[in-house]
Length: 114
Image (tube, rainbow, N blue to C red):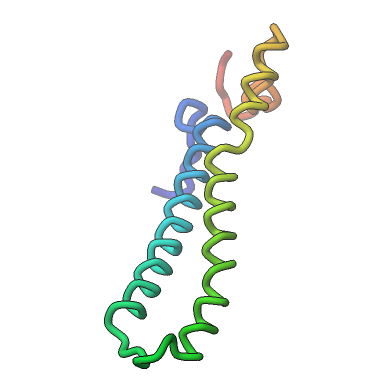
């Protein structure tokens, strides 16, 4: 398998690459957010608290975790919803197909006959 080039049919389209990127980023952020939720739940349920209220360490922990979880939720929703509406509007407004990578690359040097 020495230095084989992928044929044009094996390459991913831009939409497929964007879908894969959204999936990878979305799953990693989802796992991070899930981990944060489980850590917070663990600290609430299984860690011994003082009788009269919340320990100062836990109060600082929640002050730190709250903006991080909010930020991750916003990023996750932005990635999942981003560019979908804009791309549909562009496609509806133009009758010409969007140029692809294959249109810009000259394959005649590789021996491909069109």
